[in-house]
Length: 147
View (tube, rainbow, N blue to C red):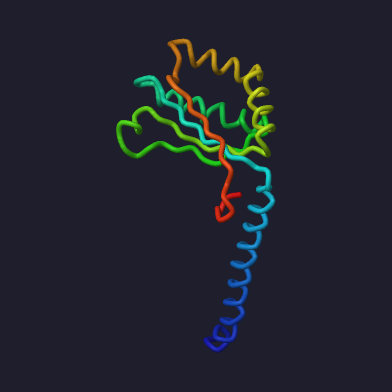
């Protein structure tokens, strides 16, 4: 019996190695297909009114992220700073757009979406959640992992 296992070991290692290589190849092609030369990134920073950050995060998690996708925006990541005082009132996120013009069209469609208007109105019943919004459009440099 141990001879059978020894003779199967090289095949098992080879199959495992091929699986790892195939997985990496799929990931590479998925990333390449998701990226285009004209793609731009938008870094947004929201400063919540005192005590309202949890509501801002809930609105994003329950509604906004899906609405962004609906209107052609690609959600890259959502972040909370680790250190106070920013950790107490700040949401930072990164979106990708096919182009700057596409970003403008997506934001216009998002703002006019009846679902967003309803969610925004409901979330503001006790006053506005966000005190300040900053937006910076970014072009990746040639050596960036993300293009």
